[in-house]
Image (cartoon, rainbow, N blue to C red; front, side, top):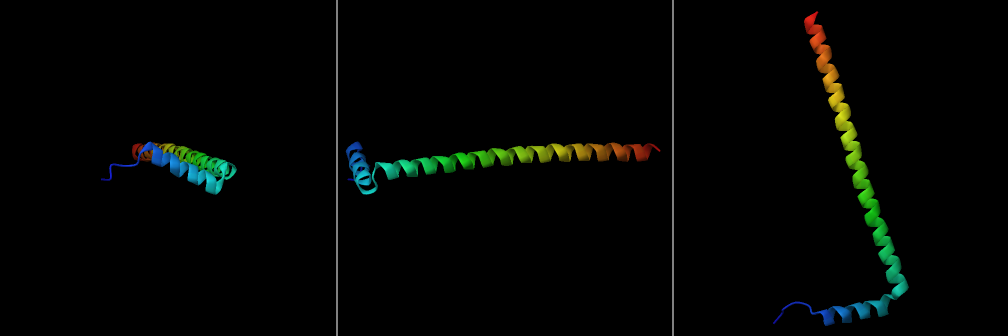
Length: 75
């Protein structure tokens, strides 16, 4: 019965969408969507970079605190 969508059905849907919206509007939608995806990826990379920098700073702070405590114990 419902074996899925064939290539012909997809092509018919694509032609109808092109007739409704037009190729120029579809191109604009595609470029806007691409820009949004690129912005999202850049934000994720920036967030990961900030997280890594914070982790490194926290490790440096904890290691300097540990060495300070050892110096106090030796005195």
